[in-house]
Amino acid sequence: MRSGDREKLKRSHLSAEIRPELDGQSVRLLGWIHEIRDLGGIKFILLRDVSGICQVTVKKDSLPAEKLRGLEDLGAEDVIYVEGVVRRQPKARLGVEVLLKDYRILARARRPIPYDVTGKVPASIDTRLDHRILDLRKPENKAIFLIASTVLQAVREFLTSEGFVEVRTPRIIATATEGGAALFEVDYFGRRAFLAQSPQLYKEELTTVFERVFEIGAFFRAEESHTRRHVSEFTSIDIEAAFMDLYDVMEVLERLIAHVHERVLEERRKELEVLGVGLDVPKTPFSRYTYDELIRELREMGVEIEWGEDFGTPHLRILGERHRGYYFITHFPTESKPFYIQPCEDDPRLSESFDLMHGWLELASGGTRISDRSLLERRLREQGLNPESFKEHLKIYDYGMPVHAGWGLGLERLLMVLTGRSNIREVILFPRDKFRLTP
Image 1 (cartoon, rainbow, N blue to C red):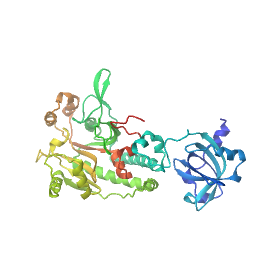
Image 2: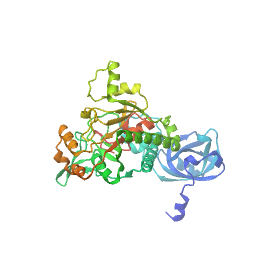
Image 3: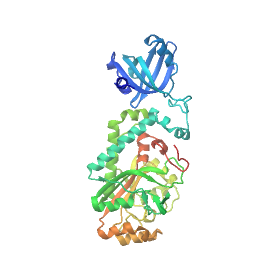
Image 4: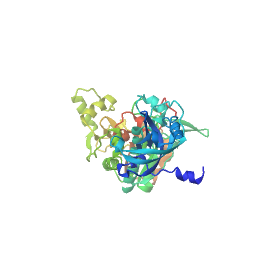
């Protein structure tokens, strides 16, 4: 292509920028054909780009005969270049259309398209994921990930402003950081290794260097559960801070959540409208309930549950009906939490731990960590783990380990709340679970 051709094919506007105020102005557009409607004497091409969809109108007398015939070969998802003139049109999308003056076909999609991007033909989640790139072109699905981008920017912005340093920890590890959590085992040059399911031990160690650290990254669990909220590869937002306890990091977390809501409302109102989601900034502080309080609450409703038992999905659904929005559950039984969680000084049966909930959905988990080596070794043994396997981590405690606390927040679960989606796979570009390894 000659340089002049390249210059000619540059767009002048995005679809969302085509407004009635541009009436009479010449524009150049690039995008995909979302849909074609042929009414005989007039043809409407819905042109889609990253910003949205605009209407391109073709009249029989607006193009040479050869160009008109070429339009007969156009179909959904073809990539085209369009030149036209903006015209006010109250009946069109956003009250405006582009009258076609010239076009060029840049890439053709094969026929038939295996998946309907317009959404007129219903599709199961598995069919959608089998054709994920086409599925992501649907405006409502693209909106999810534009919101996700804003969420990640907001998280980094907030934590950096709070004095946290962003870090990167290994994904190939020699020891299970969560004890009994399901792990993917890998052959590491003949040695046994695992894919990390959390940055837990590394971020604790790094508090002795940077005091406050955070990490946003992919982690892995060999998750057998095939539910709407479990996957094998997920994105975790983790923090760890020296000289903080569970109450301090809970306060950081609730302020972060409120900040994320604010940013999404500021920058992504259009995407929220596409998704049909009404979003408000939650009031802080969030409600706080102890494990014991919620056990009593369930029993008062006639639910049978033993003290020390974890809240299962049926329990959480009941609690979620009574406690809407964001709230914390605190002070879980020590035996139900990982080895690194600090037992309460006045009652070691309970731990300085918390979960952040939204209705019945768990979003985050955290607490005060053990900062005493002898106690940590004892907790490892109590959970059936060999302290020798954690010697690299334990030796850090000999070099001055401060009181510290932190949490891990599931990005995708937060996105489920923000976008109103009920299946976690909808908020992951290319989800991985027990049954899905492609695309």
